[in-house]
Length: 239
Ligand SMILES: [Zn+2]
Image (tube, rainbow, N blue to C red; front, side, top):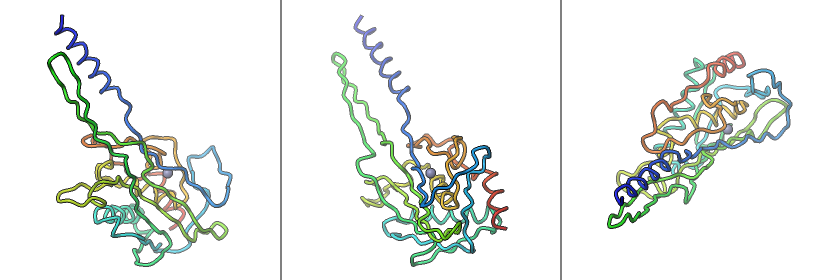
């Protein structure tokens, strides 16, 4: 009888752990300094704002705080857009305020390690698991326009506090790597916002407003490419 109860409780714990909702990363809502009506009928979410020169400069305003991991991810994302558009879009990293300014910050008390003791008669079971709060991974804003011409934009990238960048110790993982599986999905998403692409209601799109957080080993098939229609649209606009 006792054995049946223990098995029953373990089964219920298993069901609870399997069906816990996965936390979501939110990628903010873009706020434009101007309100523009857009055509709802087309997949084209671009409102017609554009950069009028190449290369577009970018500046990581707090590179030291960003750390080597995230600095490299940011560079990779800009390079990816450049190479995927066959250099029609090009970027230049500079060391002073630029066309696009990128800043890193960290969210505290979001990554939590839980330990729960279960007493099943004489048996103590300690359940250990980690969770991440729902949080915004990035923010992007076009901060200055002249007519439809984009003059400046700001990107904020948000990592978890308590990892390599904020709590350095040997072998520590980056607070940006912890929920990204090492992908540049968030960086690409935010850069495309400052090319005036809005959110797309398709979880597979790089412009999906939210995505699962890829905590720990949940990394299979989580890397995103830039949508073909976005690349084609960029090439058409800027060639
Ligand atoms: Zn977004």
